[in-house]
Amino acid sequence: FRELIEILAISRNQKLPQPGEEGQILELLIQRDGEFQELMKLAVDQGKIHHEMQLLEKVVEKRDSDIQQLQKQLKEAEHILATAVYQAKEKLKSIEKARKG
Image (cartoon, rainbow, N blue to C red):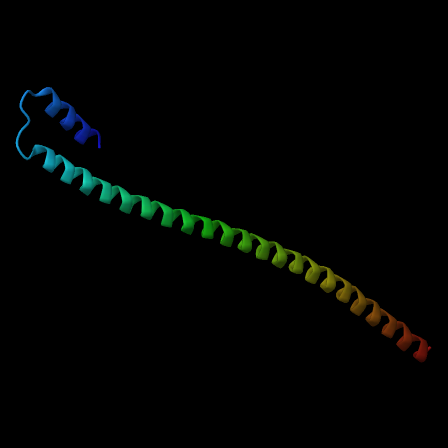
């Protein structure tokens, strides 16, 4: 756009405008506007994709947090069960000793 404005400024400073030059400049402006509109559409689309990615990242973070919490609970349950099994074995040993004695 800067180039086109410079061309317009130069052509206005000239005493006699070139025939057809204004039409060419208008064509260039229309072409550049079309390119700009395409780029704006692409930018909007990329913005939407970026927003969706951010939402998905939040979902993933939440799921990771849930998984970590479940893993913690499973480790606690494993520890409790291991302790209970150990105590049960010890109790069985003491019952066995009592019977023999």
